[in-house]
Image (tube, rainbow, N blue to C red; front, top):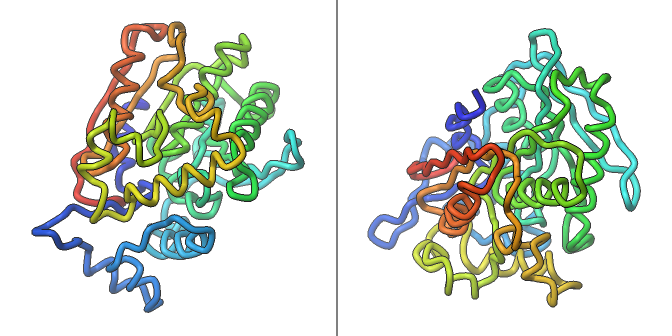
Length: 317
């Protein structure tokens, strides 16, 4: 039933607009719902999300442009904090209306490792609960530039350890969890799956990778992935934005940019990974690397199932 997540493009992290005769398209109805003039101009001009200040522009726009979280009905939510490698890690636990036990999805939000959080992706997590019937644990991992690589990965793995050690309180119906994420959150989910395999646990049953970043996403990635140039401009998520995000994320570890903890597609041992659902977006600079990862792991995962799909929506969400 997890492959029914094709509904999730309506809730994707970035709003990707298709080019039309060199002009950026936007939905006038969307703009009508934005009372903040600055936010409207932001959409029209597709200002790149590349500096620290844009984190707050992004969160504001995201909250206004996505459906109200309260309109996506679920059973309950609970905010809590767990111990992490460098302080507390905030979590938000989303529970379905029906009684458990449940499958458990550990969800990592996107945002280039610089933006996003529990609030900006609240609606996505709720929709994931509605679509799958699973209990979702969203992880508010540390962000760059204050906390560059490997902070996000460390927090994510710590959250996996916590979830695995709380099967009873989470009412987990399995002895494993599902990892999921969108965009750079998909990167985290893929990396955590590889880490768990390398460390012989905790057990992960499935991966849900939504338009994931699976390799370096600096500007030189276009050598390998034509979509980086094909959709370099005219979209909210631009090649320039990705390049700056990547530099912020890797500012203290440039020499490790090809490490599989950064670029999971570069792992030399992809055998034995959990089965995966990989979705890519038609008009996305990251499209080709997501599809390349799906192709690379297909036939090597255990069991040998890797379902892929490409969404061709003009914009998200």
